[in-house]
Length: 427
Image (cartoon, rainbow, N blue to C red; front, side, top):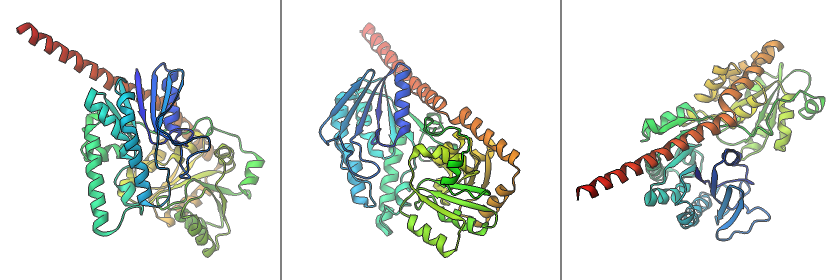
């Protein structure tokens, strides 16, 4: 197949899922054309070595990457974020007119919705089928993040985005959701049920893999010879890391919490730990990703916390895949699919979102768990990852969907040609 891939972010930006999917499709013999912007995420500045210009194309074997200009920004300004999204729609639309019209199928990474501009044109002009990969639910990702204005303006933004996203769902030939609950929400918003399938995300497997615990790793995280739980990731409004800090303070006699990462709520969470006199909570800041598998092995458990929102029922944070790929048991403070995934795999402990007392109980239960049971959890975590979430499994399912909608287009073409011939014969 000739596969078009449209994504605002693409390596060397840290969107490894798209990058690895593209590499895997190429290795399976497909010709892949990527349409993307110039790299600027996460700092909002164009990467060194790149210059924003019109249509920079690179080709290596069966892979071609076409970059179009974008307004580089990734700060807290809603207007600048809108400018980034809109600029990609404006620049990718004419570029895609020639670049995507003769592909067999188009894969679209969503969000933002503006990535759909060029695929929509190809779909309209040449009936090129489109697979929409939904990674986050809009408009909630905007309106519940503090990026949207309050009052009637916020409600207007919500209605506008909701209407646009519903049209995308109806327009796509197939949709991939990253969890069962997200699939249900996408269907409730207008997608045809038969079009929507669940494909769990995978992790960066070259980085996150089982490692033996080492003295160096335990020293790095300040392991004190007792149960140590690690939070690794963004510290923002959706993660509710303060819930883990409060729980750790309540369980201070039995366990330690190590926080690795940074984010806009980091200072507030650090102050909370100080106010609670939580001396068993340590902050290590952001560390290089290539160190994380070793550090995971140095801790007994990983913890994942999420905000309590209805729209988050379908969110499975990437931290879960990373931990399970490393064979690390997971303690989850979240509702919906994130907790269900760990419960089903029997790969950790769970409790409701934003309930620090319940999480404190889970921390104590984890500290009391026999080592043999913890090791069994670790093996279950790794096995579940390989069976349900690995890159080979995920890309294989996406490839199957791409084949199916491409074949359906070919069938429609043959049927249309047959009808035309019959009409000609009758004349």
